[in-house]
Length: 257
Length: 276
Image 1 (tube, each protein chain N blue to C red):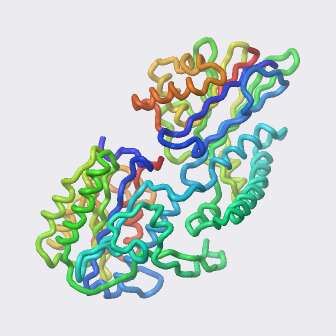
Image 2: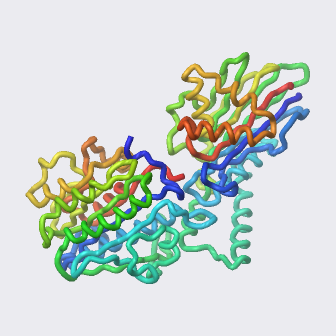
Image 3: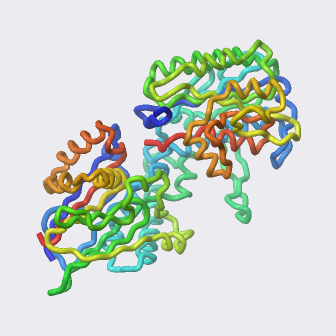
């Protein structure tokens, strides 16, 4: 299977790059040839500690895992997180910056993030298939022949709220968390384009589509690796009040290109 | 639309608490798990709220200054009452509140009914005091000066929230004109919000966030009701999450609050939009 992966990201307006708390994977963009491709985006919750790091852990674990069951993927991410947290505490102590009273509750509560993972395959000689898992409001859009044919898990621009479902970094209620995972699958054809977006871009995308717009024409023509062009587009939409001021992440997948 | 301004470090807002320190605040209050005075219950609740605000805004790079906060006491006089390194200051950025509690006290806390209690360090920024009259007009005037300066410096902010906590009638005149003058201050996002929390030693059921004033027992309660701003939608939504269904005209007002009503009132009255 041949495909081209492009990724774009931007912190919220007024924040430095190190405060970006979304994540995406893979980071290597451009054309590639692979029997199976996994891509993922995640949105770290603003009100938890280390949520950007947790979002990054989730997307890497999903993409690098050969496992299909979300219970296994989440358990792997959570078990890796304990080591990440221990290393964080060690670093803070080494830097003579012990954990403060106001950080302790957040670290105990754990980090939280959405997760959207998509897998594309094309068995030898067969049709292309995709499958997706989601927890939260990061969205997958599939565009074919200038039409939106898949919108998952949300399809209504009004459905975005301030309290999406999230994956916690602790495993205390793993069964309950996994029960909330939504799944979808479908087929892809040559020329289809898949977009993975965190909430602000996704809400913009669905809002534009609901007004009979063709948001994919705008996002589809940003050149691979041209994050500056993405930032210019975002600045314009933010200034017109059409794009929420939040961290932005978009991954575009063009199979068999 | 008012009350929709984004709260960010570039566009913070402020919370100002006015705390009655009159002598009657030394009387006991009901509704808690241990006997305490009204002054102690209020100090406990506001100190805990400050601590929760700090924790909510804590990130790995420090506490983000989405809010500036101040606490003004009125009794023997009218003055800011944050202690320690913050003494004498009206409004303080949250990151400084985080690093400058007046004291850290060790208390036993449990994370759940069956979890063993363990010692945690709890910050306090001010102590209870009950000494003097109830100069509410002077306190509201001081609030108008502090908040007036804030909105002049932050014209696009989510409107400042002023919470007046009292157990009795004003002893320095009719507070309604002062309250109106405070509520007349505006940012581009709407008028300053003034909420009034009346606390009581009695065992009467609290009246929390009433709409119309028909159920209120006397003229004093109706006066505080008149002085209280209507709750913005996000605060009504916060109340709904606590199973309090309020109508659109619900005001930021409570009468005869006990300890649990104080905590609920402060929680709802400081709920704002998502932080950026």
